[in-house]
Image (cartoon, rainbow, N blue to C red; front, side, top):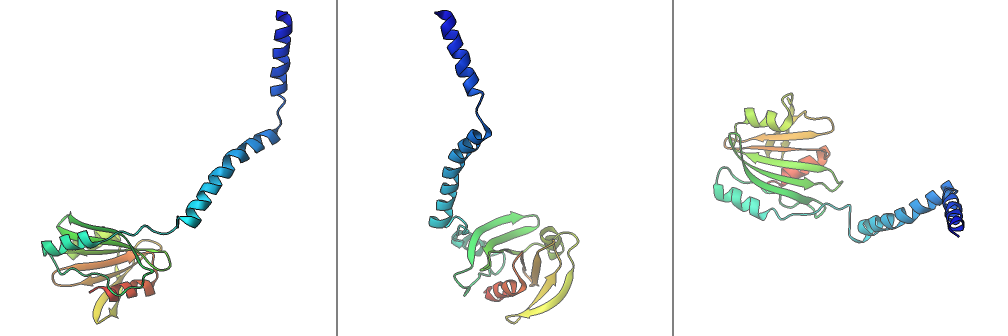
Amino acid sequence: MEQEASTKEIVASAQRSERRPRDMVISMLVLLVPILLAFGVYRVFFDGNDPIAVDPAMALDDARHANAFPVLVPTGLSGEWTTVTARWQQIDGGKALRLGLVSPDGKGVQVVQTDAEPTKVIPAELTAKARPEGTVEIAGASWQTYSTRPGERALVKLDPDSTVILMGEAGDADLRTLAGSLK
């Protein structure tokens, strides 16, 4: 009787080892289909690709209250622009207000306003190799165009009491639109 039971176990074990690669593919599909459906639902119904907007009011209020420099705020931009980060912070040599935005074409732009020395902050933000390439007039103000990291553009406005830097992957038109909206 014991001999019979062990023979049945051997036969069952042999049958399990005869599974084909097709069985493995079916098992993987059973696992992957629900995962892919969950990602699809997230992207379609919950706008999974859209940037998450933040309210910059607290950082702007902190910057205004510190009175380190005149705070410039993007105004009049279309609803397609999204503020994704806002931070008021102490940096080496001064204070800085940083606003991160996503342009209508989905590219990131950072606005940095600071009272730190331009000779220190420009290389720190744009790289040590950054050099001015020219000057453009935007909304009555003079902005310098800078070379920066590959794929990025930068505009810099030097005021007596502050430096404003716009940098990111957004196109020239979007950078100029953003620069013109700062009031």
